[in-house]
Length: 104
Image (tube, rainbow, N blue to C red; front, side):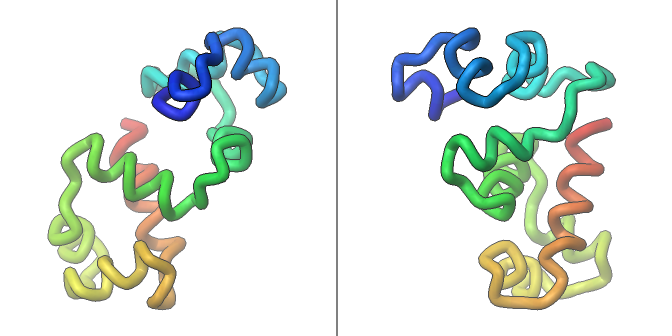
């Protein structure tokens, strides 16, 4: 939402640019559960953010700590830190955990 607002785009304009309907964009921006909205991959491309960046922002927004992820994945907090930055193998495990925890 911040990316859209910084550019002065309405939801309708941004949705058009992403190639999705306004309802889908609204669901992404409001984290509507069970909305049936597709994953926000187009939003990642449109904003220039990487999937890792999107997940870190999402983790922070939902108050999920690196320690919590480390415990859940049986890894160290340092490993999670490096995985989020792409410096460790297993970033997909971190991404999967964050998306799973924030979509329910």
